[in-house]
Image (cartoon, rainbow, N blue to C red):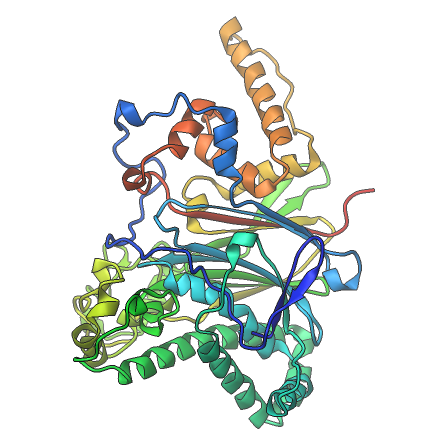
Length: 521
């Protein structure tokens, strides 16, 4: 769909209505997604499952299975981005996280990267990861270019691609549902073209950066709206007596399944040295800044949209009657069920009670493919919508000291503090440890001194082991020994936990580290 993929060796073109999907994934389990803080759960797992026998080769095979690196060509087309490292480690089966990376080709261009954390199944995160960047491209393009694209479609001529995708081979497969998504996208740019005066407003807003901010907000909200409309159209074509085709209700692109599941999103848009981060939910973007003395500091560019954010909590409460003040948020969850307060999909927190009841009654095929928590009306469901898909956008002018940006789903931040993340990435990039001199303290034993020396050696070895900075973070997040080094036994145990137990100790983790500016000469 108006896109092409980029690889290290060349590029290939995709047809107009082509769309990417994970056709090999299996239906999600019936268990709803739960969130466990780092270190929670029963640690007395069975001896038979302990992984002391796992060797380094097996560990690396698991850690590096989904790692991906991409360098952008030097020059204006890179927009100040040198490249990125990315990795994913699932905990759910199948994994519910997704990632995307692409370059916007026409117009002013720009680089787009994002991480998407799904819940109640992978369908929504999968769809958003494939479609959101197209909506952002349409929202940011000048109207004259959209008019050229529309004329090409009307005249059935070849349409130049909007995006060049930078994907891991396993991040896309055969098209599935492309005609529906293209139809919705075309409606979007046609509506933009109807307002001939919009071009002048965009040019005026561009001076203060408002154009990109408003475009990101508009793209997020419009895609969520289209997902809802597509699901309602699909529902209207159904009947209580309708017999589903084999596997139809299980497809990841099924509009109802997409709309009933949900996902958060954290997207970076970088163009001509200006960084915009659009965040929806509880994934995070953290900037790695190198100080004049060579040290590293972490700058958060996002806010979590959950009960731990007082402003977000007040926003939710203010949008509903005072009589619901005790039920809108219960146990730090929306209606006692959902942790993030903003998300794509999740129409069970947006549609009317009547509409939801119709879904439950007429589409048992879809209900069987989603988690059990989605199959019933939420309690105290009185004044929907409760959930918003409007992102919070941060604008930042990239400085020479801004060396990298870390985008990650909450699975990483539950295990590591942002300063630790930035410190590890910074040290891995430079290959130089910001070591404090080892000065034996009063009363320190030889054993204690030996431990400090082994810790330093372990850090140096881990820096050399992973060329991919996202993999480096995964290794430390799962194997941290409490002193900043990786404990091989702990790492092996975390990676060998059985499927039914892994979710108690960690969430799906997706990390993209974006390298900024030119390297030191």
